[in-house]
Length: 527
RNA sequence: GUGGCCGUAGCUCAAUGGCAGAGCACUGGAUUGUGGCUCCAGUGGUUGGGGGUUCGAAUCCCCUCGGUCACCCCA
Image (tube, rainbow, N blue to C red; front, side):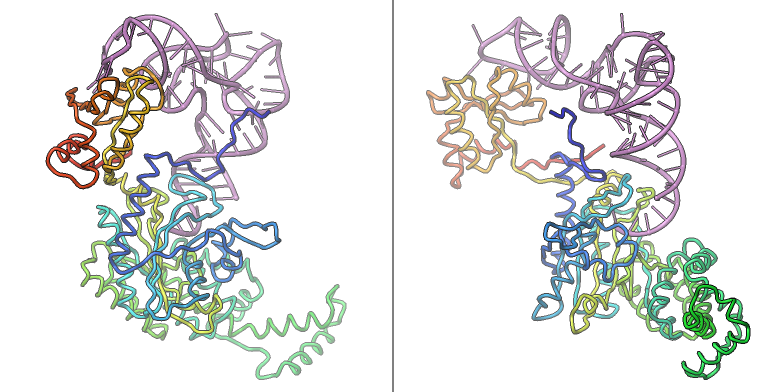
């Protein structure tokens, strides 16, 4: 038989009661805030068809998907986030009336290299708001996320807001769609962090043909070297040119293949120019970050220069103004027009919340607007929507970083000890009576010497211990020991029983004694 | 995914090529129905795992698993 212990799966955690309670307390605080804004819980599966997350999530998520085939040969995955599942649920059964305001919490999975604050299984808690469009909805969702942190007592966080729609307008204006639009969207984040040259290098590797065509023809002077020729004519021209050069140069490729490639390449001029122009814009846009007023002003200038519709920027401006109304001032909020986020379903406002005390994994929350996702997941209609999710473990780390406590409320604990074996039955009755009176009664089941039980109760921090033995059983009483003072009182069991069914006077006194002045506010804090 | 550091008792750590140890914790006793202090005794280790070098490896080398830090990316 194998003796070695079975190891925990990499990137997962065991949370013993102390930590599990803290996590649960944070999650409940977040959910209470969501509820206070009118959101209600929705539960969705941890297990989903892999396709759900392959459709619109983007390479980043897809490459980290915990996927597998089940016994029926279905391609499944452990969900990497909550939004897609909630939207899937909505598409399957749309609510009769909009808006839909739901929150969900639970484990999500990403196959990454683990480190502090980054786990393969972690807990997300977030909201989705389906229905409303416009700046007020954007602002309220961001404010909700901020307010949730405020209510936990956090102060050292910062919100960064951007808007994917700005690049979207530009690409649409340049007629860029499909693969290139996606590639360029992805480049925004890269440009922001590593500069435009890094983006160009990557794109050149990805599609040297198209890109070099743009470079060689010159970005300022686009040339469609096939003029207005139709497809058939163009191919004929290219084929005849090749014939003049001699077909030997063609190598193993068939003539048709080569002709098609060349036609495509020669036609690449305008497209490549569009890419160039988009990149120039993206490079400039990615550099726009900082205080809202400043960024908005520079953003307007950039859009005018490139002749791009400034509707997204105006909406962003409105959201910032509304956030200010809500009390979320510029001290906490900054704009970053290069912010694009890894999930590709975002279409409009996007935001992140970071905490200064967390080092490399500083992001507490991420979200944004995903107006196309509902259609992308199969609905025949399109519905605007937005949402965000917190990383609950990271919120916990942030609380630690700010030396904040999480308050866990619970009933008082009482330790019930039979003084000797013959009185175990009576001790059981006593414990049950205490439980009926809304106390947490821990029965000593170890059958160890009384002093060992008391030593244990002392170390464990029980405020009150109930000892019952021969005398107590005969008299129908319990002996209550205050562990802090060593004082003991004898209380008739009948009073406790009466107290359980709404009592006053003596019963109230007795229960107050056991509770040590009512419910204990246990402060749980890891140091 | 790339690079660095770490892994010895439940916990914190010592032992740098020569008998695997200490403190705390845990269990029992001194004290038969009364804890915290004190004293005595005890349990607990394939030194993360596998292979190699060596008369001899916790120690040196290789592989691997796990953790962690910085990148990358994200919650």
